[in-house]
Length: 212
Image (cartoon, rainbow, N blue to C red; front, top):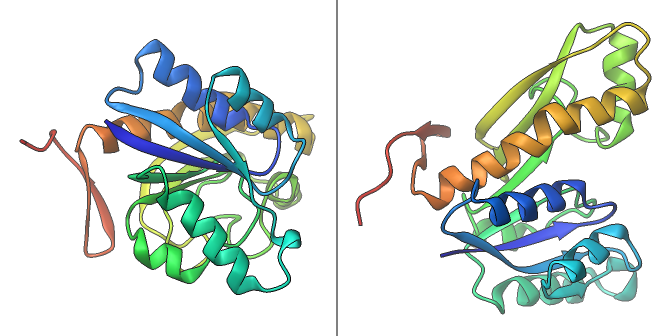
């Protein structure tokens, strides 16, 4: 079984999508062994507790030195034997040493069709505000591997979502979640757990399950 550690910072709707997909069989041969939050008292922790999943809160503000925070985060990820790290709305920059240690074993969900509306400063509602300001007709979500850049790792899956007249950033955000994020994040995890994803020359190739 692929051991997942999910990193969160807020409401945890993508975490819930993963939990539901594990429970109903859309994700096979994988399970969440730990949820780590960068903030205390967030809804994501309640979702984990309700599902019987172990949690940790590791806030950067609790550490005087960045190096101490980095060590604590890496230790909390290593401890349960994590195979795949899933960033589900995690709003803290990952330590470079963690990214290197888990190369091609960290995935992130971003609420746009990368390379549009991504990179430094593009997160949460800001992504949808900019999409509406720019007047795009189609937006969406992307699941990608994490590298040492910002939203620059190899793309695994994308799904398009229509922008409709009268959309506000909040309405568009929810539609992107419902129609794209909550679908392609579990799908990507299932593909990885099934041995169907590999990275070649910086690009993701999806094929048949690897033979054991």
